[in-house]
Length: 494
Ligand code: SF4
Ligand code: SF4
Image (tube, rainbow, N blue to C red):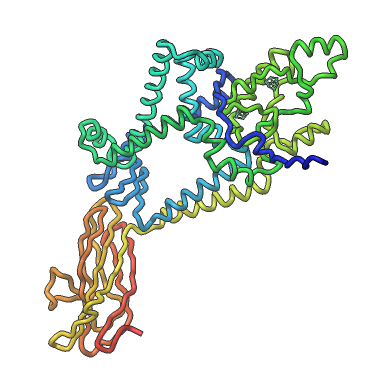
């Protein structure tokens, strides 16, 4: 009797869905990409920690913090620009510009954002320097990791985690300073007078920085972040990516094998890769770029530095690992020269992204320059909709919100446009003093709410639409208009 055919097992059941993390202990390296990474790290950290402390004089009526998300007053300040809630489209525009900018950079040089400027990368890099400072370079770290928990190891770990926690705490602490006056909040925080939400936010951000930057590191990039999945849609055969030139490096072999090979068969046999594994040792995500493009590669370029050094030490030309496009790979395999970098960068797709990005930026600049700094909104009373006065005239009530978005008090006029035979008065006036143009004062950087009544004499009291026009009475000028309706016993305006 034949035995039953073996049930095919799928790949996942053979290797399992869960793989234990292999520790990553990147070796210290120097080179042009490492220096660029240093520069970007310093810049990002400086901008993040220092920005809340920058001051910007806006006069006595507005905060003097250069960048402030003032949730209490629902304002966003960025140097000379002040955004009110109804101008949120500027923030949306900035976010869209940031998104298109990311598309532009990714299409040009792959995951440069991931490699140099993403907070996860910057803080992980910082923590890896702390590792080197406390435990030593790669080999010392590996040895310590494998060593038993002696008092000396425990002391080192406690010291290192304390530094992790301190960095994480300053990171969380800096974040809340974007939402209130930084010197005041710092004082309140340390004297226990800050709001509970400030302490909670610092705690949450401290712990997330500690865990994500100190322990999870490359796992965030590989398993948690959606960006590596999205970015593949933005890459094409002309995007510059960190590439191992296998046509030049393979077949690989150690220096010893190369020497034997040279002696026996001539230098043609083995490729340029001496299999020194330096590119793997310096990689902050622990991958081997010689296996081809992969999701773990954040295109930081450190393997280029490491390989260039190996090439120089063994008298070979640099660039075995380098930024290259898929197109160039094909060309180089055929022995042709790569496309000039400028032509690669200025291809139609890039120009379209650049065009959209610039057009959006220019449109926002124009709108910023042209926006009026006053606004009005009108809410008509619904109950009662109208009141018939003893002389036969009809009165409608309105709640008006006058917004002065300048950092100084302003006088404004509110005028009727339409409503023949009509006049306006507010709560502070006598009805007999009703006029077609009300003059009102609005405090600096504030919204003033006023109750206003429109009256139409008996002859003109018919349902109709009309406008309320707000104008500023100063040299800056500016105006706004809102249409509303007038209701009588004959009903609402048609
Ligand atoms: S493979 Fe190279 S470029 Fe990619 S993450 Fe590792 S070191 Fe950076
Ligand atoms: S650093 Fe260069 S030579 Fe060394 S293993 Fe990596 S690719 Fe090969």
